[in-house]
Amino acid sequence: MTQVDRRARRRQETIEEILDIAEAIMTEEGVNGLSLAEVARRLGVQPPSLYKYFPSLMAVFDALFKRGQLANLAIMRGAMETAEPGLPSVVAGLTASCTWAMSHQALTQLMWWRPVPSFEPSAEAFAPSIEMVEVQRAALREAVKLGQLGPGAAKEEGVYAVSIFCIGSLTQAMANEPELPWGKGRFSPLFPRLMALLPALYPPPKANTSK
Amino acid sequence: MTQVDRRARRRQETIEEILDIAEAIMTEEGVNGLSLAEVARRLGVQPPSLYKYFPSLMAVFDALFKRGQLANLAIMRGAMETAEPGLPSVVAGLTASCTWAMSHQALTQLMWWRPVPSFEPSAEAFAPSIEMVEVQRAALREAVKLGQLGPGAAKEEGVYAVSIFCIGSLTQAMANEPELPWGKGRFSPLFPRLMALLPALYPPPKANTSK
DNA sequence: GTCTATAGCCTGATAGAC
DNA sequence: GTCTATCAGGCTATAGAC
Image (cartoon, rainbow over all chains, first blue to last red; front, side, top):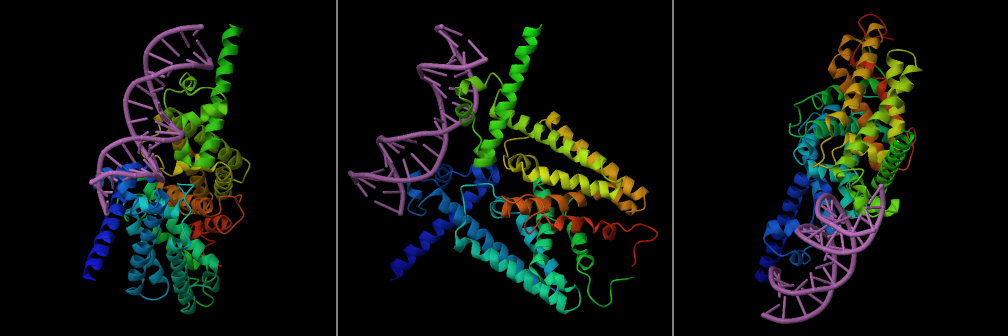
């Protein structure tokens, strides 16, 4: 049985290597620039060999999409757990998410833009994204409970507003200064200041509204 | 000389037709899906004929980029001029711009995302974009002068903040509900509410801060 | 200005030997 | 599992006849 395990592990390693190479190609050539031929070239095998690991190019996109979503979710969760509950947790989670995104721009484009119209992520690959929304929503609910925000922030709409701050800063940063890390440049430093506007968008019922 | 004029006009019409077709292809197949062969097919000519009008595929991208920037700038300007000066003018201009963008999504992606790494717009094609920033900045300055916003809004940073609201709403709308017009759906209705946060981001010096 | 023809590449995917 | 060989098609771009 160790034979089988070893083979399975080796196979998994190859799959990961293929995805690493695919991500590198997308970074250099754009999301649409990914081709199995180029992957094969860099991996040092012939193109047909890749079909033992992925049935099609779209399957590679799907695996990349899923891997990106899982990585991003994990990063966000980790940052949220070590921060104060409620609003600080939301900000910390999204900041970590954006930092990850800036250093994985190709995956980010695949996940949050729609650069390949013929590619639709599978339900399985999309699942972490749904969970991410849930995690954020829970934190926003907590912020409402703690009196940091008004009740509107706990509705679906609150997540959308927050996502606009996040994706807006990120899109502008990626399109205009892709070589700078998150936190540098003209756009990403504005993100925390925009997040600080949330209490103005969803004013908490009691105090803290006026100076 | 009318001979020459007629020929020049006919040539210009063909160029416009090529660009219309190119935009349609990008809408269907994605920005990267544009190919001169498909343009030729739809125009009813052979691919080599297109090289009489554009020296390369990148030149077509550049012409599309320029045409999009000019159209968007004109739409924005028109809306700004008929609105009240200052902040209302900024909101009206960007709303018109976003409405245009939602019905020209392929051009918008070409202009505001960076989906084709090998394409860099020429200085000429990029010029309207610079002017657009200037127009917005002038309106923001006016808003400061009128006491609608604090002085920070008139700095470069003010335009960037506004652009994040705009591009954020737009990106989310295009990626998640591309078939809905601007103003419908989960994201674009949030845009005016985010714009209404500007006085909280750049508080005017005197009154209007407290309720 | 448009055409035919073609060079010279690229691609995704499959069949079947080893 | 990897290979060779190949299919069947795509593409940009150019040369040169008409």
